[in-house]
Image 1: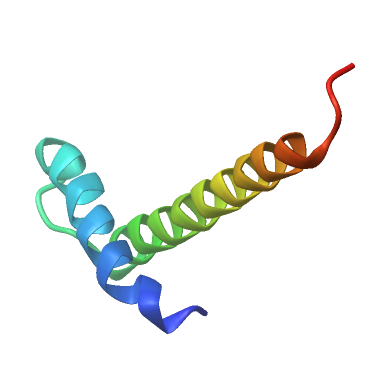
Image 2: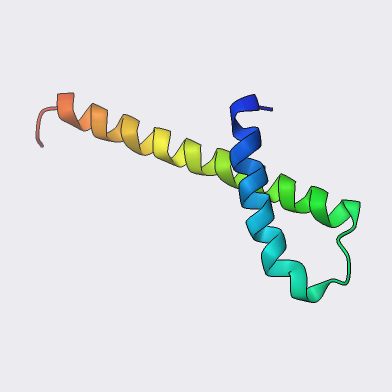
Length: 66
């Protein structure tokens, strides 16, 4: 787990849980864990997409036009 993502993951998990609040009387450990897991993997996927796009842009700078 990337330690620098713990804070942003917790923030995103809280936002996810706030959307679920009306559906549950109380949050179980499973609900909280699932929200944290979803948030973490969503952040990682977003980072990977940004890294991929940045690499594509960087490559395009140094590639001759076709």
